[in-house]
Structure formats: C-alpha cells, structure tokens
Length: 230
Image (cartoon, rainbow, N blue to C red; front, top):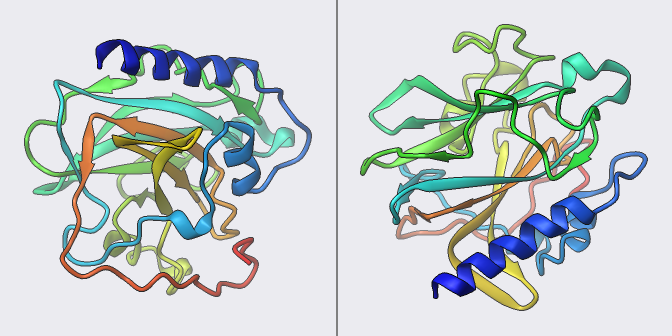
C-alpha cells in the first residue's frame, strides 16, 4: 500500500513537471485531460447542509499538491493567490499555507506550482472539521480577512455581495486517474472571481475525508452568465 501511494505521488508530480506551459487559458476539462484525470463537470461532488465544503483529517497529516494555476500574464503581480485553511469552530482564524505568484517558475500560467518560500504543502488541521480558503491579490491586496476571501463552503461566500447567487467558488471532485479512484484524495478547482472557469488554481488534497450530509443536491448545472459550464 505504501509503495502504491508513493508510486501514485511520483506519477502525479512527474506529470506536473512534464506538462507544457500553453498559451491562453484552457477549460477545466482540458486541464483534467492534460493530467489524465478521468473527470468531467458531472463528476463534481455536490453536497449541501451546514457541513458542506468541510473536510476531516484521516491520516497523520494533510497534504496539498498544486497542479495548475492560470492568471493574467500582463499583470503577474495581481495573479498572486494565497491558500490556507480554517477550523469549523473558528471560521475567522485563517491559517495561511502557501502562496502562488509570479515567483513560481516566472509564469502566471503554470503547471506544477512551486510554493513561495515560507509556505507549506503539509499541515496538521487537528481532529476538527476544516475548510479551505483562497485569496487573490487582485481582489484582496492585503490578503486580509476583511478583504475578499472565497471558501470551500458556499455559505460564507454569500457575504461577498457582488457574487449574488453565484456562491460556489470551489468545486470538489474525486481523484480519479487512469480509471482508478483514490479514497481520501480529492481534486479542488477554484474560482476567485465570477467568470466561472474554475482554473484559477487546481490542486489535489489528500489524507482527508469530505464530510457528506445525508441529502445530496441534485446533479444540475448552475446557469450563470459567462460561465464555461455548458
């Protein structure tokens, strides 16, 4: 089992390093295809309820493996984003993990992102359920709690007035590659703003279980103007 896990990790990281930097911004499904994920929009895990968007740790630690990030080549400094987590009981305590910006391979569009010095890929969230958050420098210059912060939970995203009903900013998928689904691994695709391409940052999180409510949402696609979900 340990060898199998190490092999999967090696394959994933080699795919990150080998994948080409391409012009323009591909769709999320294009990114899935590039990295060999057997996923489409229909595979999104859509849940509801008070624990929607929260995870619990299942192993010794939680790890995040960044896969791809897409931003504006003309304004690299505004493409910087931060990723972190918060516990379900202390939602206002944001714990920064790592930052992706122009220092990562010198590109806004990159595969296999290097963490900014000082950031971490592994963390110990404790036994309590936790959520993830993303902050974009272009929308929150100081990376502050008072600034625009999107989360894996839909409910707190309602506080950002300009989103209206468009509050799903992190779409979570099972980790399925080469026909195999890996338990405890998930693919998370982020939307920092409102154009809904969901490839502002894509990463794999492992060593967790996504909390599921008893009643799932129906598998319907949200009709949001400008979205690439068609």
